[in-house]
Image (cartoon, rainbow, N blue to C red):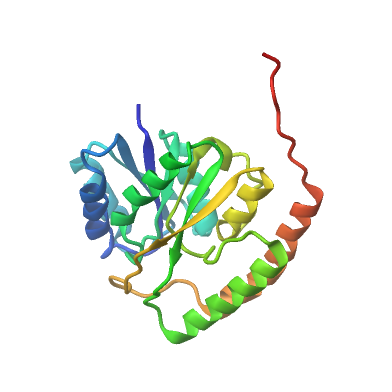
Length: 239
């Protein structure tokens, strides 16, 4: 039985894939039963060829392909739906998240007893350009003030959560930025853990600060509406 599925959404990240996959294997090999699930979100570079080669070479490596670009949230959802593991770890495909942090997130989850809990990475020392750091800091403050999700860095791509609970989240585009709020709405718990953050390995970011800001405004108010309107009862079965 696979305990953990590592889901990695990618768009035009061909040069970063082999190194990141090897780092994931180094971090997890011999620790637990795992698989790696890459989701190609309509890449136009060599990403499909690189993924095909890894599928041939690695028995616990799988690749999914979107026929057109559908967004990071859609890619994460496709990967989680196809995953065989009971738990999901997500990583950004640009190499900035460090797979060596996954065992620490796993240990934290086990210390809390599992269940409906999300362990969220917290980039305490970001390796981004100053404009991206400032935009992210401002967005985190606005989001935390409105949603009260008690998560200092909801945009960090490295997270650990139970697959079954994630699949109960209401789906909408860009919802990968609000997973902590959606977990709390579901009655779960969110714990933030400091993680390593690195410069991008190769290539360039596919998303700009303005892009994130424009879509984030409507999404933010939408999630706040969901919090007000969604009441998830705790269910207890008579013994």
